[in-house]
Amino acid sequence: MVTMRIFRRFLVTFFFSAGLLILFNSAGFAGTVHSSKVYGVAIDGYDPVAYFTESRPVKGNSAYTYTWNEAQWHFSKPEHRELFAANPEKYTPKRGGF
Image (cartoon, rainbow, N blue to C red; front, side, top):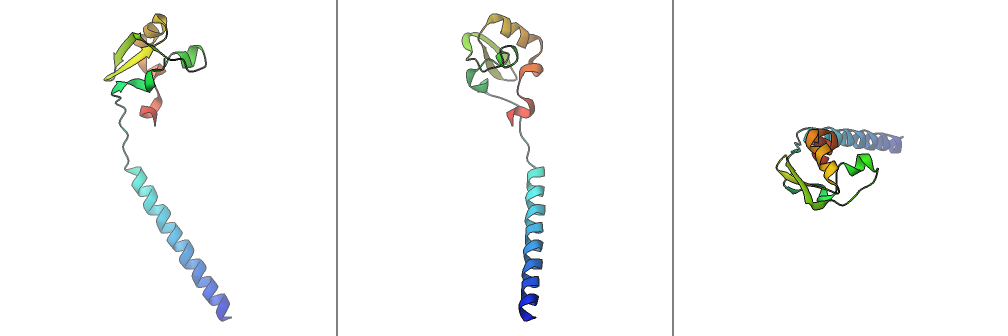
């Protein structure tokens, strides 16, 4: 009888503590803000349009660059640069890449 009471007290304390951890951890993440600004060379110099047209990552060439959102975007072909310039939001990572 005493053992069962101690076990119940342990379970109540455990679940109450776990609930508090989840509550406070969720509140901390809710306030996190991620910037969508990129500085320097975006996505490590890979061609963002190639992910859509060739379905694979292709390293961009610094000869074909475009500046957008305070970053340099590199492309493997001049045609990809033109597609990107016409609609950058279509080809860039969503939510700042996070």
